[in-house]
Length: 72
Image (cartoon, rainbow, N blue to C red; front, side):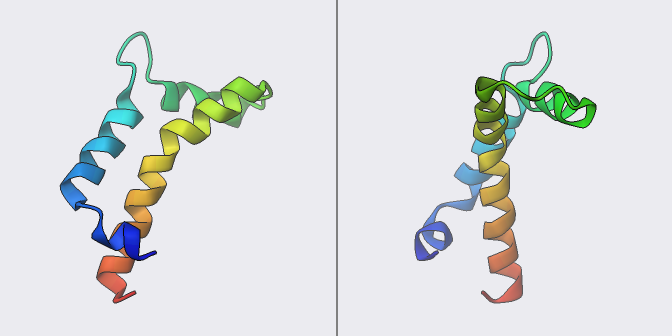
């Protein structure tokens, strides 16, 4: 996990925000896919991949911040 500790935090934050909000209209993919997941309609492989793609930077940011503030 040293590569994640060395990754610049501002870039990771920008990437996480950008991927969470893309595309802006009509609705961000992450919001749409989370809604589909809660309704039980997230069944297509492309939709599952899209959820993973748009949420991966947020997960990486959470792990990076957790490792930074807990002393690894």
